[in-house]
Image 1 (cartoon, helix red, strand yellow):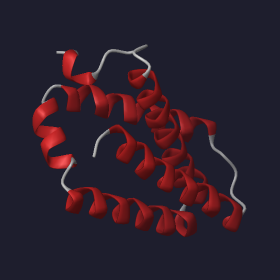
Image 2 (cartoon, one colour):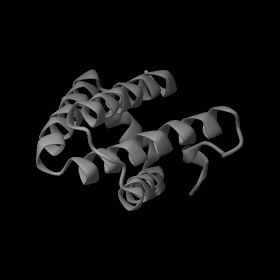
Image 3 (cartoon, helix red, strand yellow):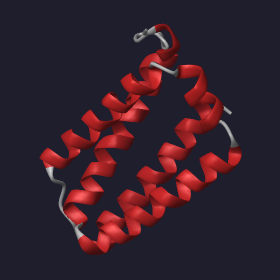
Length: 116
């Protein structure tokens, strides 16, 4: 578990978002992309306050699996209900999270457990 698993899960969601964009012929909403990215940053800041607890729960295979399934369901439903907004939010969130992982892995950004 860890960074590689997190990156793989985020990449799977991003791939599903990309496929959904093509299937429904949706356009990116720059505002929703930005809000998705901001949401990811806010979540990481809040989660870092209780890093060990969050990590303990997140690294459970059942939690990771159910989270992936939930994300894919929201992408599928969102692609039919409000594709531009939902898919753009997920795109912004996933891309930001992957960038965050790269920045932490390359030590450009200190690891979250050291933030507070």
